[in-house]
Image (cartoon, rainbow, N blue to C red; front, side, top):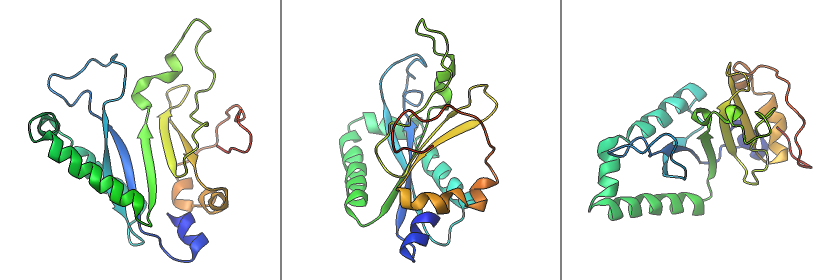
Length: 185
């Protein structure tokens, strides 16, 4: 949001979305090894007055709304109107002149432990994402941290790379160079 605001000279209305895995929230919960997507979006509005810490609080509050009772309502007779209203809100956000920042976490998928017969991966990445303003979080190779793959417009990267609030959480690590042309990690 800071990068976009710096480039445009003023704050642009924005919303942060976080995918919420509903598989463990339905009753009975689906198995951890169940394949496929069963997810929804938690949302938190961004503003020029909100700091990173408060934005995290807001998205956590939104995620907590997806408890078993809410997911049960999504499955029941009132599910269609509930889902329809939520989809309507998402469509309104996408059609508005608003920046959308999408977050997802692959942290519990243990991607560095996957072995399809060639051995465990040296590097796991979602660098092929073509959407802007997407952050994919996953566990680091050795399980001692979190890796973040971030996509954004190239003109915003300079401000993003110098953001002191973010840099306080960052550490330099080695990763293989990105296999796609014109992409940055």
